[in-house]
Image 1 (tube, rainbow, N blue to C red):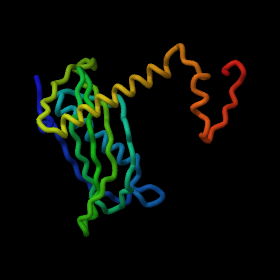
Image 2 (cartoon, rainbow, N blue to C red; image 1 turned 90 degrees about the vertical axis):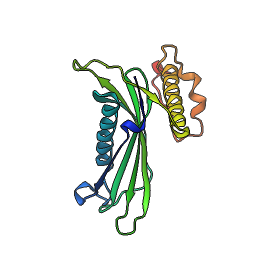
Image 3 (cartoon, rainbow, N blue to C red; image 1 turned 180 degrees about the vertical axis):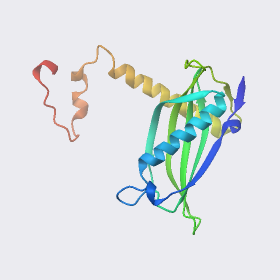
Image 4 (cartoon, one colour; image 1 turned 30 degrees about the vertical axis):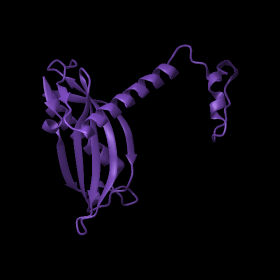
Length: 183
């Protein structure tokens, strides 16, 4: 079974209240992450038709602060599907209600895993990609997954040698003071 991206696309909007702010008066990043997790769940569950859990969150960059009184809109869509997992792309925008000015505040990627009634990974429908942007997002997700797997293979390898990498740290604000048994 295959589904279009449009069939599970979700958008939510919420007015930012003083109770959502941090000590500097801006909307707390943790609150925004909580909303992002909720919309990722809703989008993934809508696509898969099952309960979904968050497996990982990739690339959370807070680009612009969100102010109290702004209307935050989050848009989520399935960017990639594996056998049981999905990458949900989320865009966060804040609108100044009086002026109508909209600013991009965050883009992020949540990897969600579909679960069956026994809590086991469940197969998800494939994707029908029907425009160039959707194909590009799928390809970008593939690239992020490949890079993540390569990094894990490189640094989690039992043959990893710290000596091979020490030269790369030159020029950074770091001082290496390892015990002799770790050198």
